[in-house]
Each structure stands twice: as C-alpha cells, then as structure tokens.
Length: 305
Ligand code: ADP
Ligand code: ZN
Picture 1 (cartoon, protein in one colour):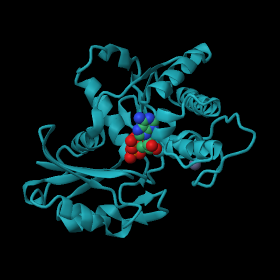
Picture 2 (picture 1 turned 90 degrees about the vertical axis):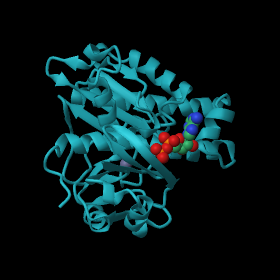
Picture 3 (picture 1 turned 135 degrees about the horizontal axis):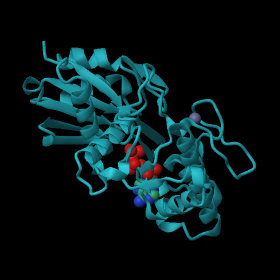
C-alpha cells in the first residue's frame, strides 16, 4: 500500500491507497499558515496506523516543490520536507507540486481511456496537456509529449507567476517580487482583495461571485480577470503548443468565470486556438496524481529498506 497526501493552503488530505483505490481517507485543516515548522510531525500523526502497512509516501504539496525541499511561497519559508518526512515515516518519500499532481491525474484519466475523447488528446509529437488551477493562488502543471515537466528547484510551470496584460492603469505587485503576475490579478485572493476595495466591504471570492457579480464594477473586475487568464492561456499555447488546457480550481470552475474564459479563448487569433476543458478527476485529483506519478517514475526503485 501507499500513503498519498495533499498538503494545500486550506486543507490537508491523506489517504491510504492500493491499486489506484482510496482505502481510507483523513482530512484536516491546513497548518501551513499557522504552524508550518511542525508540518512533518503533523503529517506523520495524521497517517498513524497506515505507516507499517505502506511501502512509501507520495506527497502533493503547494509551493515551490523541489525533489528535496519545499519553498512555501506564500508563507515565505523553506523546509527540507523530503528528509524530514523520511525520518518521520521511516520510509521513502516522494514530493510533487500539487498542480503538477492534478495535471498528472487528469493525464492518467485520459490515458486510461475513461473518456471517449482520447484521440483528441493525442497529436503527432505525443500528448501535451496543461492544467491551470485558479484557486487561492494560481498554479499549473505541464505534460509535454507525455512527460511531466519538472525542475530541480521546483519553480517550473508556476503559471501564476507569468505576467499578463492588465487593463487597469496601475500595476499590481505580486508576492513573488514582480508585478502583474496572473496570480496577483486573477486568483481568488486577488479577486477578493480588489472587490473588497470596490464595494468598501471585506468579502471573499466566493461571495463576490455569489452575491456581487451583477454589480457593474464587480462585473468589470471579473471581465478583467478572465481577460488576464485568456492572455495566460495564449502565452501557454505559444510556449507548449498544447491543444488542451484544463481549467480547474474553485474560481476557474465557477460557471461565470469558465464560460467567459472559453468565449475569449475562441476569439483569439487562429494559431492560438485550443480547447479549454473542465477537470474530470474531482476533489482528490492532487493525491491521486501524486500516487500515480510516484508509481510511474519509481516503479521498481522505491522500496522500503
Ligand atoms: P485551494 O486554493 O485550497 O486549492 P480552492 O480551489 O477551493 O482551494 O480555491 C479557494 C478560492 O476559491 C478561495 O478564494 C474561495 O473564496 C474561492 N471560491 C470557492 N468557491 C467559489 C465559488 N463557488 N465561486 C468563486 N470562487 C470560489
Ligand atoms: Zn508573481
């Protein structure tokens, strides 16, 4: 059996998995913004009773996830999470960015032919798919010609930190140190922040969509955000040549947001045309993707000592 864990900004979800199936699952609130230094200990406790039965652990984690370290960008702290967890679990641990994990889950779903549209995902050079999550932040995962794109420092495919056009006159600073990153303009956090100023009341992004989307100034804000995401998608097309973008996350999946992006992408020049799809793997995509990717790359090399 394998332990799979999804460490997010809002929640942590852990599962004992076997043969691609979740045998048991536990969910708790995330501690990465309240007690990050104790994260390794916290994860080991969460998995009590499973460790003796498991061969290794596959972790999908938010942030800049390298093979050894995780840099928790929003918390501005870096942990040697692989060695910490290997000591705590006393077994091999494999780390992957959470959006990369979700991208791999979507890719496996398609490869396993669970949809009728497998051929649409295959081009002559191999299969290329890009997953974008518009959620608390904006994350991404790129599968180029059948390979998940990774980098030693874990910063690859951080699509939220690519800059995009912004219609407003002023530049919006991003916590990464640049301005006008997609994440600083169109993430759930950014939308809530801008909307709260516009309506002079503190609101979260969900409330913006559910209660205020009809206000002209909020409608214009959402319009600017979906234009920013469309610009991001055009940049991704020019970088990867993908014909398939999966747009997920609670903000990306909100019908108003998803439909506006789809319509705007259809108006891009012809060479930028591609299909924007909704994710198929559901709420457990991150941990399922980490499970499958760890299996994929470590088929025979990860064994409990
Ligand atoms: P996470 O960032 O932990 O992966 P989500 O994908 O749920 O989680 O993203 C959380 C963000 O999405 C928050 O900013 C939240 O306010 C916003 N959100 C949640 N539900 C909705 C909704 N129905 N419509 C628009 N935004 C939403
Ligand atoms: Zn940035």
